Image 1: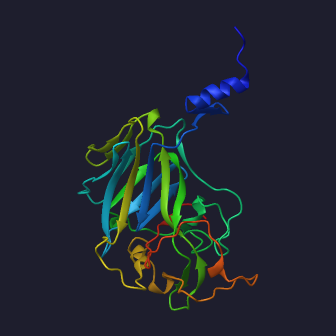
Image 2: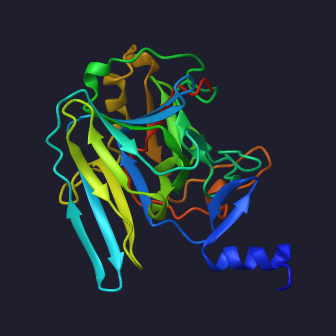
Length: 297
């Protein structure tokens, strides 16, 4: 029998849907589950624990929902997960993974104001403790958190961004800022094992998703105004973050979508309204947008 060459072995692995890189098994096919977070949420990076947690912040005009979108040869179906949770509960996520710890997708040069950056780069998520904002560790009031969804593995990336935004702090005037992450996501390969979501407070299993032939899922966590609710132009939803990050009102940031026709010129003389961004933008006029903290800039 002829000896298999390396190239023949790679072809066999690809046919099986697997490749091997640096001794770690990865997948040639797409993920069977994508987990998406959108709306009024605080994303916490814990470098000591190597965990990533998403805090859901209750606020007026906002509703927390969890939906599963199932796509198969039979069509598309959706169902909701009950979210009658104890305030302050933590939902623990079990994801099949080859290694523990979380990571954040970054690739190449990133410049928010010029619209330069990989479409999936995690840095579109604003970091309130980073140099674009306060530049130091912030105090938090965890009593203002409804529930926290906690991961111990997975790579997180930006799925979509807002339209270009302006921002101001306190009573100052609005200035051009750029796009921010509207949705943060991570992918899961269910052929490696089940996805399990469990309440830490009660030990109850909230959700389990298993691999099915020719089936993919989206699991969407959303904390936003209900679709039937009209959001007035210029509404300031960013103010609701300051219940969780308490500080004087003079230090509060506020955002608004860049008004159509308003030229925003960068240092190179470009009208940033005309820049061709790669991102599929949201058309939400009052974007909640998530915020990060714990990243130490």
